[in-house]
Length: 315
Image (cartoon, rainbow, N blue to C red; front, side, top):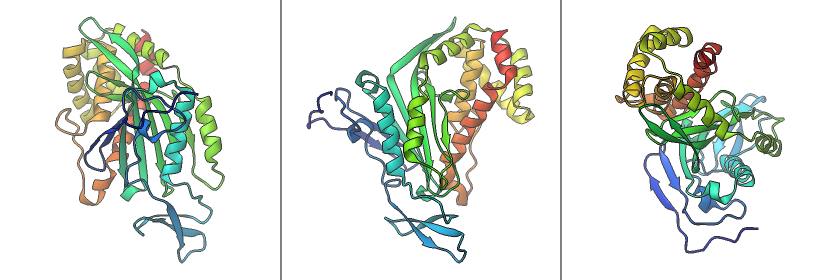
């Protein structure tokens, strides 16, 4: 058993808006079990118990935030009570059971919320688990990334993904089905079974790093890039914007498939003037940015899982 952390150790916490909450754990703190000082506190917007109240339909019930009394959803009568804190702490426990302290030191956690707190996403970066990707023009480190999302309103299944984040531009990516664990939050859902599956879904992060290096070694040009974009994206306006974003990435990374992959992850990471894919937020949907951006990550995941993409990288 590792020694308990020094009680004097403190968290450095940077809080911004509810959709962008970052917690950084202390860099020299040993770990014993799930210590909240490793991953930080669960934000108040997600740290609530769930209660249910009946609706006029016997087959439905309201999901109530017990802290505020606010209804945050309507679910089936057999929907289980699995609040955010229980889910996220158990995911953190599974991570600490599989990784050593050297891997977990300096962990950074970014939280996203949507739908009045009914949706929560925990995005963990492990800077000490990294792989160096080198092109003819550029070198960058990518670090392991673990993403877990959870809903209490029945609109999403509980999911955990493994991926990588590029230190050069802080773009994040989830690749293929690599380390994906998913369970519907239905009456048959078991948190214990879900975590057990997570433990069985260990990811070879360095294998993913080698895949990124293969992309970096595969040189390309704009003509070839436009052809693959037409094949896997299909929407002309989006293809045009992505071509421009690829050229921006290629100016730093060189003309290779890693630059195109970086354009994809830039699209999934930023939603403003930096990449031409500004998110148009309608007033009534302004709380759903986290869901929309994760949808972009899943869109990128689909693109790089396309057989045409794999064939081009291997060519």
